[in-house]
Length: 366
Image 1 (cartoon, rainbow, N blue to C red):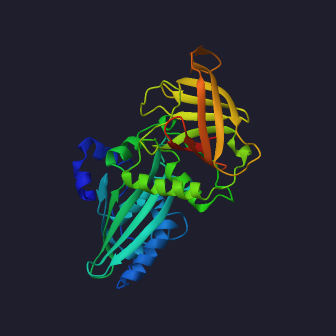
Image 2 (tube, helix red, strand yellow):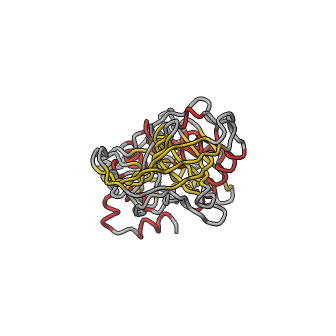
Image 3 (cartoon, rainbow, N blue to C red):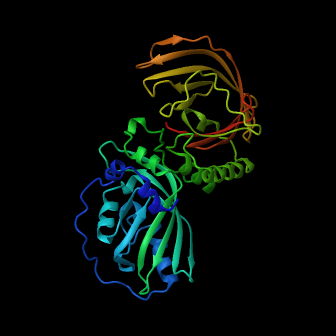
């Protein structure tokens, strides 16, 4: 479905919700740079998309674009809105995202001299400037820029890798109901492919990925695992949130030994110490949880290479509410076997052996 068709398909009530603030009347944005080549326009767009015209951040999160290459009546279409005014579009972008908490990455750019069009693919996400601090999870946009006879951008159309309904849902979801999000800064020694994977999965629900994103994530997981990075066991301690589940070779999931319903607002965690693990599954969001735990034994403590084999002896469990000081006991016992196939300071990949070889990607919260 085209971007304009997606806009028209939205209910009128939802389309009205996207007008979050008055954007002012359309105004002139100054003199234009006409008769630029397609290559020159593409180079300017590439800079503006990733860094901003004045290095204030990619223009989709900052509004920091080069107005001289756009017509003042340029039409901007995305799956939730359409506006034919450069000045109003810039005003909308300036009040939409928090630039310091959001990001844009340029993935690809190409041109078509015959149709006088420029194509770009970006990846973006972040925090909206709303009182409830809504978080938009990582998504990709395919953008088409149509250039007029003077060499100015006549229209900009976007198609997203997520449905418009999901974007609107995230917009109006309070932060405390959002998927777990890690604020940990990028370590200096973090491999590039790990950073890429972290940005793809951080702050996302397990079932929110498009098929295209799943292919990309699967390739990154394979690349990371195949490199067999060394294992720093000190990085394991802390609370880790499940961000992505890759089924095993025969479609197997993970054996969590936690009887909780698979509801959209329920999330899963593991809390590791040097010699214990606690599996946490939400029943009613953070208000009610099932917790099961026990001892954690590393098979070969002398080795610092991956994969690392662990045995978890589950010895206790309970339904916990409030401050979790008191829990209703559950008769949960058993042995869990898993491999640690990558461990970084803020991202972990594990492979469950009880559940048919499924792999989990977790982000560290603290």
